[in-house]
Amino acid sequence: MYVHVASEENKVFSMSADNTVKIWDLETHACCCTVSSKASAIKGELTACLYLLGPRALCVATSTLAFLHLKVRSVPEPHLVHSHQDPVVCCRYNPAFRHVVSCCEASVVKVWDLETGQQVSEFISTHGNAGITCLTFDSSGRRLVTGGRDGCLKIWSYNNGHCLHTLQQDENQSEICDCTYMEVNQNRCIIAVGWDRRINVYFDIPRDFHHFRKPQPHWQDDLNHGHKEDILCVAQCPPFLLATSSYDGEIIVWNVISGHMYCKLNTPSPMDGQDHREGPDRSVSQLAFLKTRLKKPDSAAASLISNGPGGSVCFWKLCSGSGLMANFTLSREKAHVSSIAVTSGDTLAYLADQHGFIYVYDIQEYGLQGTERQAPNTMTSWRAHVSMVTSLELIEDDSILLSSSLDCTVRLWSKDGAYIGTFGQNRPWDIFTPDSWGHPRVPFEILTDPSSMPTHALAGCLEGQQEQNHVTEEKVLLETEESPSPPSPEGPIVEVEAKADTSRWTSFCHGRLLSARRKPCWKMPELKWPSIYQALQCHELACVSAPRKKPDLSVTGSDLFSVVFPSQEREAEGLEKKKLSPWSSFLPEC
Image (cartoon, rainbow, N blue to C red; front, side, top):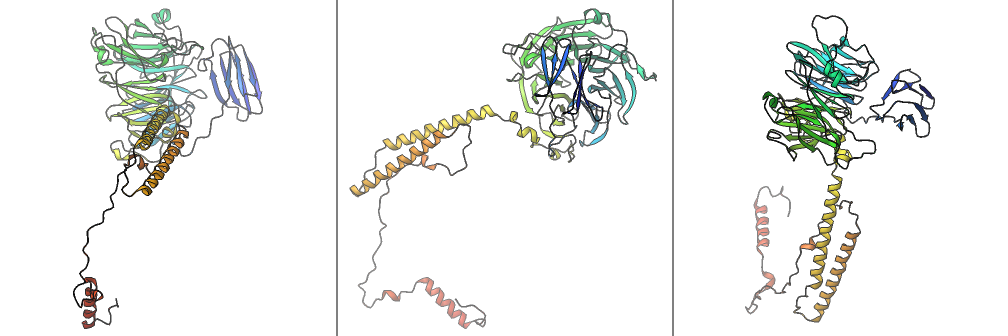
């Protein structure tokens, strides 16, 4: 529909009828970037496009106007450790080989050794120019399944990077957002969801050697009463439950065996105070089952966790009548919850947000009896990344946590938040030897990032501390001015000197007080000697000499100069011994 050649940028911008904008390199003829309307929050059909040279932005017209600014990625700093060169979209742990598999937006898959953090292998261009959006393993752990923006699922032998099968639809290839591998009545299948708003089921037949496979016919409930918006997430609860969530905040729980809808849940509206200028964001992109609570069919406890608008977290009841059991906000900044992980016993919930923070909540007794009005107890929290966390996975056999982020890193933590290391670092670690971990150090970019600093609390503390110092100095100054001078036993001369000292002391305190008031509240105090004068008290010192006896000179014939002190006697004895000693010639003279 539109093509613009930006010779000064050495780029070509193109817009097509599939509601995507692509940026091409003039020299290599390669696609540098693909911009989707949904990912860029552009609503409506694309009708016109224009590149503006001044602001270096692409103006896209639908029912509204949107500006897509062209930003050149900064060169990564050499001292920072990166697992990938591009943002990491997901990562998973393979218990069969004790490997960690991660993938980035550049369609690169890397395999890491869990116990050392070193790279084992990698393969590139898994989905061509399209990026990877999700990945999972089969039940044996020998094959890797990836989904991409090209609308295809691919099955890999990830040890050698060989593509075994390609799963795709006959219709338009819509982006795949999430996928899962499931076993139902000894039948193995791969379930994928995405922008086509349908649930696509691909049977995994062991002896099917066809490279391309098609999905099974869609369920009737899915066609008639399914999602009306793009499906963003899918989660399973063996043996037969499946949950999906969409862009409009709708959650549907399915019975995989029959294909019928089990229940439908609607996410509450955004909380007060959220910006509604661009429309409320009701999308639900993360789901997690509390599987131990679903073992009792008549249980009235919350058995499903989901994220919500405005940084909220929702607990849902599925048995004995579905409904919302709890709804609380994760952080004060109302950061969007980007990943959820729950322990196998449903005792702890690990929640990560778009700012890179991880929160651990105690949910063992939460939502068991009825509606909860308060958030569960927080066990601990820490910042794991400087950007949005894209994946969280608990490796409970080793009591460690795996995380990935858009900051191009994949990291390993203990279950309590102790930093083990970043995959790709030069120094290997041993997960069984805590001395080889990075703890108590933290990643350098987290330590220096402004969002990691308690700026508001620190400013308040400094301001309160300075106010307290001002009050203390004023109190000392007031006591100094009002305290009466001590009586002088030596007359008016000493009283004049005491008054002069008091005036100098008062001026000195006034100068300290004024200089302290002129200091800005945000400035840290400089290192100096402590102001000990603030704690000193003045006391009168009595000039009394120690009693001494005068020598008695009445004795006749006494000579004061003939007195030999003990030290002189010892020197004389030493000289006599030196003369009588056979080694006197070798001894030095005193």
